[in-house]
Length: 288
Ligand SMILES: [Zn+2]
Image: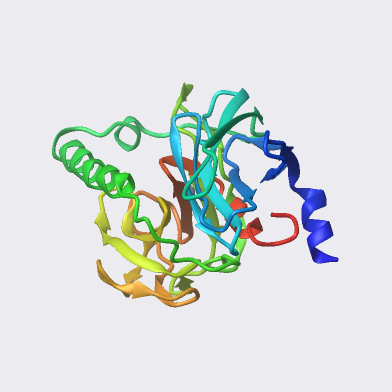
């Protein structure tokens, strides 16, 4: 029953081949928009198959879910060009006729909110020492996100790191003093200072330090280029290199960095794409 439901939700494509054996490629969600996470399932008939692929120019990493079933995961950046994108699936391996299939996956514009703010110039523009520090921090973080650990550390489902109301949505377009700034690349969850922040899944701590704008920040590497980010913490309870379990307390909610009040900024990066953390929570569920 569950399997039928699953197939109904996935967009299923059966690729016939000359030898009569068919591979099945399906993906979810059916209607994708900017900031979504794309799950690609490939069902083959030969156990020794190696499945590879790409989404636009980003290589896809597939993990095995059964003898002949493989899942790949990739993010659609919040600013990805709306329109058709190409999903390529390649099969090879011992006793497998190498094959390649390209599918067109349409991406719709994300329905993001708009916020207009007026702030003093000092709060908007970074200068001098603080700018230098900011750029050095960006460099370090960019290097972290470039690493793709060829290992899936997570198990479904992902969990919300803290309960509370969403005070700022993902993709929110921020217009500061009439100028469009970078959109909000995470969700802000309003929670009291000192509330426990939980790891959304199993992973390895890639960064645990104070940053000039983001305050006390933790980045967890979940493998396959998937990272979760936690900002503005009042306290950090892990250190770089630590292994954390899903649901482990990694720190406490705070108001460190450039913020007006206590909240958790929770972000997710997947193979370089800024994706909606709530898309992670949907993975591995019937809607996923
Ligand atoms: Zn935020």
